[in-house]
Length: 95
Image 1 (cartoon, one colour):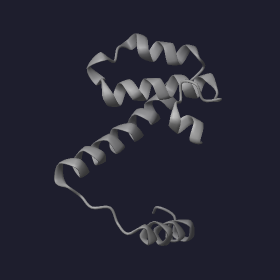
Image 2 (cartoon, one colour; image 1 turned 60 degrees about the vertical axis):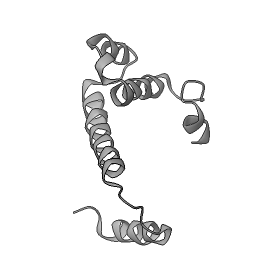
Image 3 (cartoon, one colour; image 1 turned 30 degrees about the vertical axis):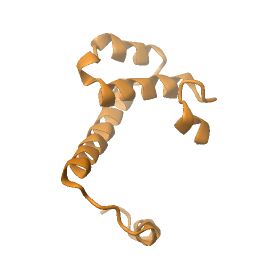
Image 4 (cartoon, one colour; image 1 turned 120 degrees about the vertical axis):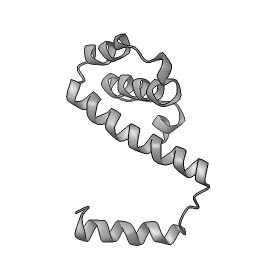
């Protein structure tokens, strides 16, 4: 995981994942530069349209939450909260 976080371009990962991460980077940091050719390049690696759609949905939500948090000055919960919430989700799920 650390090599991907450090630099997905050089990390030892599948080319489909590398292409998807590049697309999501453009989607997040430079959406005005995103073109159909960017999506076609990812499709050419074997990633499905459905996978790209799903990745865009997830990225859109996280981007929205991040921007809201930055704008509104949201505070992060105490680290112990995450362990407690994780245990709850493992027991009960998301529904």
